[in-house]
Length: 274
Length: 330
Image 1 (cartoon, chains in turn red, orange):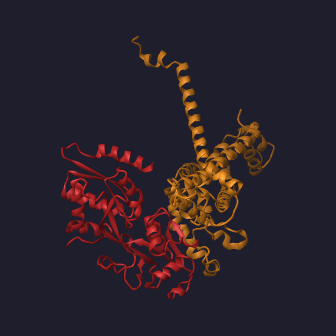
Image 2 (cartoon, rainbow over the protein chains, first blue to last red; image 1 turned 180 degrees about the vertical axis):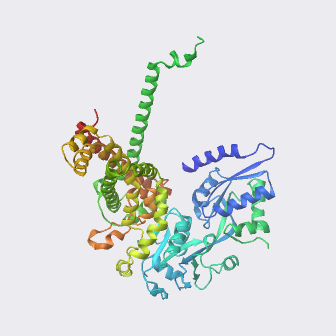
Image 3 (cartoon, chains in turn brown, blue; image 1 turned 90 degrees about the horizontal axis):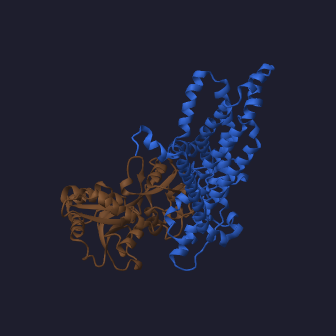
């Protein structure tokens, strides 16, 4: 219902946005919120610098909704932040770029390394004091996370919590920015956020000894435990999509220009040549 | 077609025609309102019919229940509707009640001061400032709460012993009852002040002058004559403020804390630092689940309760004002 409305809105937008020039193509996509900042940057650069006749409309309605849109034909492609499931039948997943989820503490916290198991115990409410994970802080841990609306929440749930729900002492905030803000302001907090959020005032922890840095995330095999591919989902075996779309996918995956756009927007290029 | 100036305002826009149009407009608004109420209650019905009065009771964790509801739709088995909303209702009552109580007392004194005691230049400044404050969007108050009040409470007021005493159950990080009540008070008090002071100003001057003329001092006159006869306005302002407080979602979602925990006064002073989540923010936080039928019904049941209580308060205000009609200006 919602995606239908969005599609109608997108199509009516298309009428406004697409210039009347002959040969112009508008590609319609939907899906992952986590992939949105990078995808939007790629779209903008592609339209501006590579092919002025190709335009994109992308609705960030969540990865699962996006795949459904591709299956029933409302979208030509979808962004997706998780690996394929059986329910995605009739679609093709293409690895586009990488993303890493960093575990952050306040710079006042002397802790520098944490294991996935420790993080799991903190967010399940089993470990509540910093001294229990080897920090000299000795205070009560304030775990901060996203609410269920967030794509990062789902990834964290799968990668760290084994799909068990977070404990009641986890403060679930409504936006990634609020999580970052909470960690910046509270010396006892721990939170999680994507690479794009790692700025001053936050201290990303090493996870299982591997730092949360683009260099460790990009090299196969993925050394950083909380790294993931972000996918573009196409209908069928991928060959039936419009030529313009396939060209864009190839450009975004391989060109050095796209690589720099991806890293500027907070992702990690996976295949782009330097 | 006559060539006269008021032609287009003439027969074409006769009083009768305008009246008919206005009646039609009113009917449309009423129909829309009815449709809204019916939609909300029809959608909410599955949740109410499965839970009965237990909907309003406590029992188990709200978070687990919401999870179970969401999962039941994904696994395409029987839909689960079990939902006991007491922690959310309790939080709404505490936050709304606390804020309205504090705002009522302070707004009353502020408006008495502005109308009766403040020098003219001061009330000339205060008036527009308060009207402006009343119209500030709630998300701005929410931001101020998140950036200033919440970290202050979390880092300076809550002690390590207090945090450790509830560790593993809830986090006392400043997202708290007291933060929510304070910011909500600041949000609704200006609304009350501007309505109260309009009411105070509308009191018949003769009544006040009569009292002063009999030698009653100014404070007593204001309190016994001014405030008493402004009671209809005080009730109207309070009803409006309650409605705004109950329905406030964005600001509270930002600072009340996100856990469906029922703060317990028996915990002592910690009680005011405990996080909770009222009804309206629960809808905001779970909005992405609208596409799952049992969750949809649950969210609409929350909306129905909010709608119903807002209607109840309007009704109560109306009844109270009816009883005080004699104080209104003729």
